[in-house]
Image 1 (cartoon, rainbow, N blue to C red):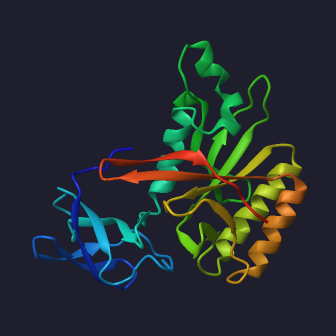
Image 2 (image 1 turned 120 degrees about the vertical axis):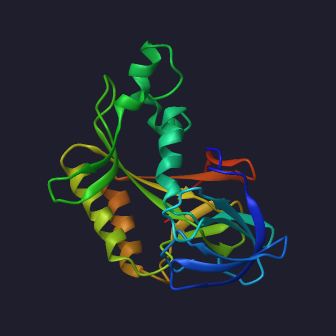
Length: 248
């Protein structure tokens, strides 16, 4: 996935009010920019860190620039959490996620290397009223599949990433919903999109949300699949490229 516009580079001055950050461009210009991440962003909002911005030409936007990435201790982190779902969709389109490749029979028949866009749906409403990020229908050799995506940027050190970065009742509910779908006979997958180039394995952040960690272990024992893929991030774009372990 290419960035929506050429990147501008600068230094982070501060992040505040969750949605805003002050940045000084390399040119010296001072900007207030949109921060597309409402989470704790632990370790990602270090003052004076290099940041990458994109500019929008939409005249209706109050802040023209969006903070996309930050560089901390030599590692690049995409803090634009909403991109995680788009990255998973792109990975499905190009058959990157090998664990789901058997669902690509429709595309293979047509001679396309990847899952046909028509073969999956996004933001599918469940009977509970909530939504799951991706639904993939059953193929000849696969059950119908529900996939929920979580963005990982919390780095605990030595390559170890963790989720969540704050107590999250919403994340707990998503695990419970995947467990319910699995019990009904569907294939249920929790997918960690790792948007930090320094992370090479992921675990639940038990020190932050022990209830979530216990739920994740229960879900795994019940049959919910846990996948994690790390993104390659550079000034040209970002893409999920490599499977990494999920530790419990």
